[in-house]
Image 1 (spheres, helix red, strand yellow):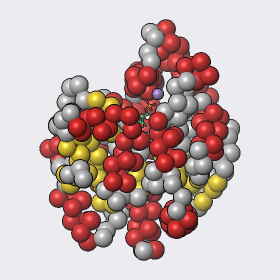
Image 2 (cartoon, rainbow, N blue to C red):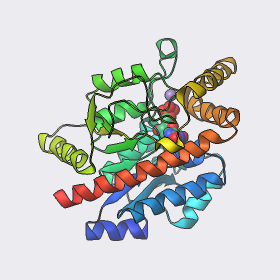
Image 3 (spheres, rainbow, N blue to C red):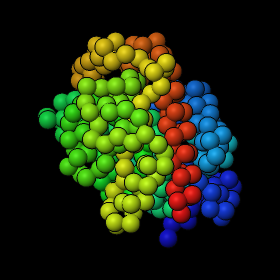
Length: 303
Ligand code: PSU
Ligand code: MN
């Protein structure tokens, strides 16, 4: 067994059988600049509490798997230099070598499942990158959704990705993609995309029931809940498209590859939108946290 370091709050919630929502930490270390990253992380945790659940932010710190971070740990992580970005491939090595790493969607799902947590809120999952037909850059997040039984609430996949190919891979891997309250698959900074989501549900209860039905059937893998950004906070897709294309060609020109691609693109889009992408990103993560808290509550109520 790996020793889990629970925060006091998560430990108490586990003992009392209260709803818990997992949160990732790569969005803190690699997805947003300091100091907004720690402010947002604390705000998202509070949103989950206000919605009646307990937040569990995941990270590996000096070889220990943390499920829930104390305030000082979150502050420290948000400013720490040289924190690794860990996914399925490097999580065990990070723990076994005493390393420090922030968890991506894939690693957060692994940690959540290990700690018995079934619901997780994030911004946007990784997916199939533009040009994947030559680079083969497909996020391990998709495979994790195919393996690990955690319901992940995200605002769709980041619009920097190839959404059509991302949806195809999710279908191949048997991952239910559930749009919340609309028919279209959302595109992260924009509420709608040209692509229909395979499934639609209009309540947290329905999503929780689908989750527990998968558990009863013994199906491996999780669900992706695609929760659109609130209309008032979105950036229209037409406005973003040329910015994303420029960011992508900058990445190609600088030969950015592997793990560095997603953080690079997010940073370039932040610069090119003069920070508007970050404001939208914050709004959508908070919106996802609130829905995830409701799903976690429903799951506890359904028993
Ligand atoms: N969503 C965000 N910001 C992020 C990420 C997602 O709003 O920083 C991170 C997540 O941790 C996700 C990762 O798992 O990017 C995907 O990285 P890659 O494409 O290298 O798999
Ligand atoms: Mn990648």
